[in-house]
Length: 144
Length: 195
Image (tube, rainbow over all chains, first blue to last red; front, side, top):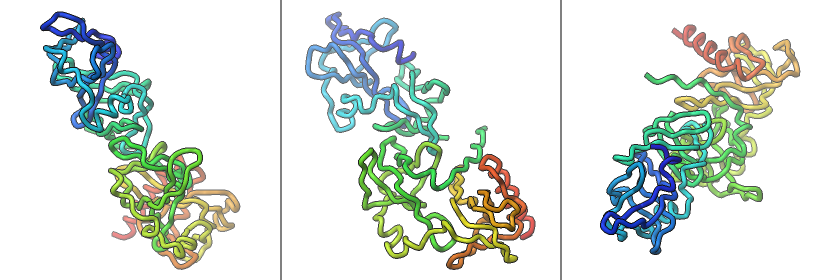
């Protein structure tokens, strides 16, 4: 499933059958490349992050959670940067470990069952997710 | 099966201003200048400045051994721990004359080929100085023009002269695009000669 398709999806609490948030973005971490957190919008509480482990299902129509309590604020520096959008993968430049730029990320394909990132997509390249070795404020770094 | 990375050549001067980026994707600094080594005619490392328009020089520097990869768009390092104090890279006094630029390139049979105007680097699976861009002397028949001359794996350096094997003159290129093949052919020839 592509990030572009999965964005804006409703987050539904299965206990109360109510919509509790909307998916605004994805926090990807390397080694192996995976969706670690979802960034949420239209939340009622203070928190905007949802860890992948707390997602019950990432379905074609909605993302489900068992309780609202799993939607939480950042817990550490890395999560704070994620919430601040510093680690947003979409639009970030891609550099190889040899210092060649391969354009900017336009979309990402991931497995909605596991959260594994399968493909990084730029305007000109389609890169296997397992090539991703780093993601920082400046760039996504991929192996040669 | 993996496709081998094509030989990427670039001039040392082109590295100036390139971002220094960790493998975790963080911007660390920008390259300020190239520091040449007196012994061996190679590169000791790079001085750094902070990124940005009104950037200031930094007290740390990037030694050659700390470089993970140099490409067209960035200089990659494993992480910030590879940086060392600038005065460790090149003591102030030494750095002033430790520079191959303007040095004369002499063949081992005594021909003056010209003066060094830039150093050509290769970034592939290993980093290497593969040649010099020189302002050619009369000896090359292209006097005054800038040409590229390949280097063997080691170069003898004495004060102001860089000594290269005479065979290097057969592998001179006029452009960087054709130079990669010339370096490969030159080094293959030297290996044949040695065996």
